[in-house]
Image (cartoon, rainbow, N blue to C red; front, top):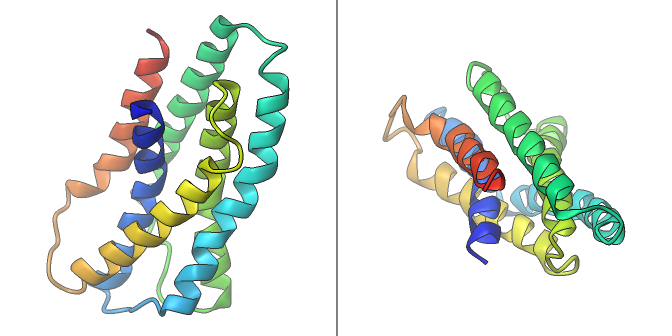
Length: 169
């Protein structure tokens, strides 16, 4: 259960930073748009998770650990690379979809890994959507032109790196 919680936080923390970045720019995300953003990771995670759940009986635990390590390592590297990007200037439909897809891709990769370990394929994707909703809203609200900590953005890639290392043991 701790692994699922850490995975969900690791996957959702980029939403917190997206919301924070928008808040620092004085851009508020309306609740309806936030709901749409949060639904995208759920919709992306369900089919991936069911696929992972189905093939989990066919592959060995050692292969599952290696796949999980590689996927979380890729997510960590990707998060480090994305830190340099300034993704969003204004909230419009294209921004909503791109935010949803970017956080949804991480959720899908994580959902696949968790499915291989037999996490519940019905509930786990909902956790992704709920956590994205909460963390994007929280980041957008708390960091609305108030705090500019240049180190907090490294939490997401570090969390993914820790999750990758946990897969090795």
